Length: 240
Ligand code: PGA
Image (tube, rainbow, N blue to C red; front, side, top):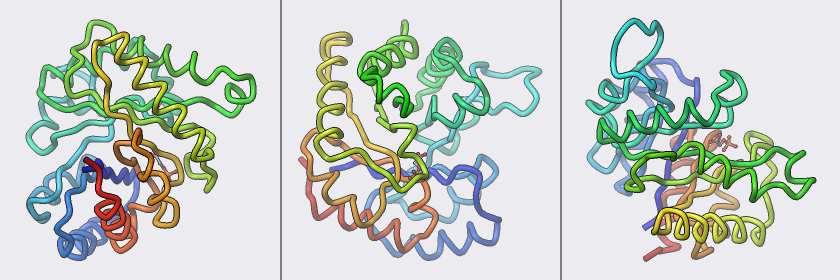
């Protein structure tokens, strides 16, 4: 069974959220949705049991004077997962390996499954630095963390929101590489999911690769019909 995750980023009004839930509830396939924090409560109430929720980020602190932050413990009331280290957070909010490491430790203490995003820039890709960079991202982020319930989302930065995706061979190579690396470094193969311009047209080919354990979908998850289509296609691809 593939993991299908929809990352809404900073989109949707309350009215749109209610409409979305009504439409997507017709689908009985398992999916994970990551709305902005303020919608978690209502979505938990509105969505049927097939859905799980995820935070788009969580704090490195458990509570205290950290204006604007939301802790992993708070998220755990609504969520099973949290995304940590999305490239937009790394880029716009200057989040670095040690920051992500603290967030992951805190999220694990709270009992959340962590979706750790990694991925290279176009520059790094051109210079053939992709695998080194990804290894470093994983190592820094997971220092002294448990290897339980970590999912790696491979999201090449240049593919996010651009309509461009790596070739299927490249996707296979990187997923296989991350699995071999995690097996060697942490004693087990982590699940690895792909993100970056996934839509209903390319999801079948991507998920048909046996090394790809799911997809992290941004833009295409904003339309409930398109996201349902992605879940249906994934269901047909039938992973073990
Ligand atoms: P995209 O976003 O599908 O819109 O490229 C993916 C992501 O940022 O997680």
